[in-house]
Image (cartoon, helix red, strand yellow):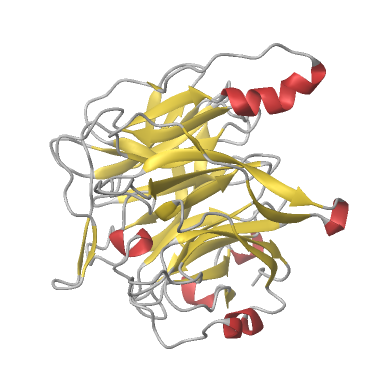
Length: 396
């Protein structure tokens, strides 16, 4: 299973128990002045669960992973498929609102396990995501194990960072100008390597792909940067233990990520400066600093376009109620602050799971995975689906 930019079951499955925090309309009141113009983008009628969504550079499309509702008499898929969908909007300028999505388009091959889709920043019709491309040979149970109070990660050896051109996106941009339609090309690996490679994202200029990579012998996960210009893969975070879920900062000079380097099964958020050689190649990282350092699970960090702060998911309110928090980035005048000194704000207040938050490129919208929607008859709790809202006062 995947969806924490590695697959934490607690994030997108029905394993999250709804707690007695703000319910129904109460979460809207609790989030007043933080978020507004809410819209549920994926529906339980289409997907058993959906999440880990990212906006295209113009916020006209989203890419996400989901498990479709099976046909009557059939069993649901055990792994996620990858989809894109065009975003529906009303109004213009400051009055523009996201009101839904058009019919999602399936990208991934049948039976394959998929995670972590991302748009090219300059060519949004080109996308990357992690995919086994075929049915994985084995799928360990991933996520937070309540009985042992430990995390277990699912790392299919067949998982590769793959690239794909999406004709519908290309045509939505070029067809109005009279350009001819293009044909679909199946997803293909960006590079060839034995072992799990996923949790991928582009640099702001599109030259680099940062991703997590598991050594098939040591089973240790480190962070690498792939240079699409030179075809080189360079390790940038190699601490012992799991390191993953990386993203470039808006200026392309830093990365954020999550790590279990303490070996205590409590993920923490980090950032680090990237080191560049003459000619612009990335050769490593330096000046790593912790953004969180506490007794909670903190993961899925994502930069605000200003670069001044990050959003992330945390178990601070309990493993039955993951919530989104925003935190000041330890850069500039704040670089010397300890994690406990950084300004922080709780963003979401709904029962159940809220996590995997991301911003649109202009910072006007936040999208995340949430269980705040309606519950289907016969199910114990609402399914995890993709939500979006206008950003009002998220900054800590």
